[in-house]
Length: 467
Image (cartoon, rainbow, N blue to C red; front, side, top):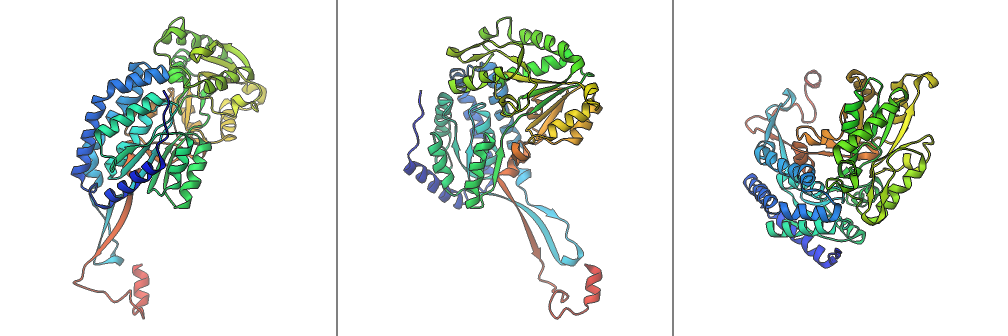
């Protein structure tokens, strides 16, 4: 199946309609927003099976994994916003200092306006529809741009949105980078982009022309630290799960391993055992094991295997785009495997020998991580206090101690990147905030008009003491 580019005149019509609709004030009423969120929730129920079927066709993603990693997350986000949007939207009173007497101070939340949401292919439902929840909750309109690399999913989402909302409020446009370029040439009130740092630079440059705020959810090489104090079997199980989830095509997947030399052999053995426990003796036959999205991705990821010595795995099959989970020991960190985001099940391993370097394991790890771009995620396995110390000395979008991936599953904490891995954050209230402007309003009484602020500034010495 191929996705056709949406005509430019159709894009212009949608943008014009949405701008007119937003200016009408229809989205300002919180009751309207809750109704739209409830309609969205009903649509997700109605279209769950078509979405799961499309995810299977495009990515070989099982219905169980599709529900856990995509649909359930969106559903939970909608429920959370329905429950809290009224409180988040309410005008709040702030303290007014004596110098502002007789004024009252308020914080007002208002929608930014017409939003553009651009998503990637790896979690094509979650990463497109989760930001949409925030746009609806905040009172924005939205144009959604899914990825052409998952055409079946993108078409189902288009049909679902058209069946649920008027295009003057929320609409889907389809196509390749020419459509992306055309969209970025138009003026938006906010752009929410999930994808690679390279494409994000284009988004940010386009947004700068109109001083448009952006939320950039990117990626990078997220380190996975395995100290000798770690529970090797448990670490191997959780890491194997995190690296094989969506076949490693996850922006917060552990990208490379820094491991203490004393536990390397034990980890390799445990990792092999845990992969078999999770996916069976022949992982290629497991219906829960996702395939590479296309042939280009398959060739890129298999190409990393030549950059080191294979410790485990290494099998691949081009016709089905299958790649076995593979551990590759790396000694040369200048090679592509250590300088490009893997986005697949190939796992570079760097062995750390503190004695040989005359430094502590923590110092070596910290120095290595800080020498690279800030990652979207950071994972440490070992003694918790040591993990907190390394986290204190490094920077990342988020992370886990003795786990991977799971920080994205808690809607009560924000999700976002830092530096090269992104800017801005979302999930729960942070999604509402991402699509909102926080407005400060001072309401001043008219029953008295103190003269101190007016020229020629009488009693200035007294005013200085008050200020």
